[in-house]
Length: 326
Ligand SMILES: NC(=O)c1ccc[n+]([C@@H]2O[C@H](COP(=O)([O-])OP(=O)(O)OC[C@H]3O[C@@H](n4cnc5c(N)ncnc54)[C@H](OP(=O)(O)O)[C@@H]3O)[C@@H](O)[C@H]2O)c1
Figure: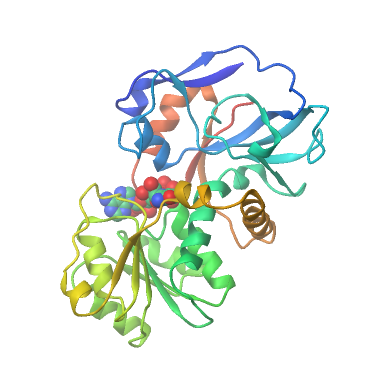
């Protein structure tokens, strides 16, 4: 079968290749075998490949943080899953045609779910869901502000917030996103730049915003923090600018603003399996009812992994890049 291999740490499109590996074989007693249907390419995959993630893998190794598929065989001791079930993998080596692993490494998905949308559930949907819930207690009518608002995480956050009656201020870097994002349910969409706090106050009628969500770092998080009301929280979960977070200390000292970091992998390590399963059941239902939907710009077979990665690294994309291993 085909599998993606990381040969060395380096420029992503140059150090990965598609190789033939032995089929995984029949599942053991507590294992299942799945045919992989869809995998997303996330910024975290690229950061890992290029040596910019939390840890650096030993090469050669397999890759792929997200993947969904269909169960093709189950071990004699498995009762929670059956052949034909749709599943999402919790493992981190999903860019492959078939996966054999213990049954607790998979979350069962509803039969009616679109596996391409579900291939973007594990990381970005969960990130948006948990960031909205873990730091500030929000109620109907409250505001949240986020940057990189047209990203996969950002779109999920807009839709999940809207479903809970929470209003969003969405900071982007391209004016052409304003109208399409409003159609998606964004309350305010604003282009990053000077006097962001004044412009946001004008758009929201001076609302007190208690939660800011930042994936950019650099000077953008500084402007975002200036928009937060006294005693509020800014959550950083990415560094898309590649620059250190530049926040005026005035915000910490005189306005009691808290800056925290979010890392999904760490939060999930602290969750029990039933909590993880419950979260993904909620989010899967949100895909099925149409609350969560992320555009897909293009899909590639594993053989074209370098082209797929190069595409995923492009700016101003219209959606995510997926792999379709089978
Ligand atoms: N901490 C965690 O646990 C966690 C979990 C999930 C995701 N993340 C992080 O979340 C971020 C978004 O991930 P995603 O999968 O949602 O992204 P994505 O769908 O691939 O979209 C990328 C986004 O980044 C924006 N962008 C790229 N470079 C930028 C820059 N220099 N300044 C401002 N915006 C920039 C793009 O804007 P344009 O469309 O204008 O190019 C686009 O909105 C990434 O940094 C990822 O690593 C972190």
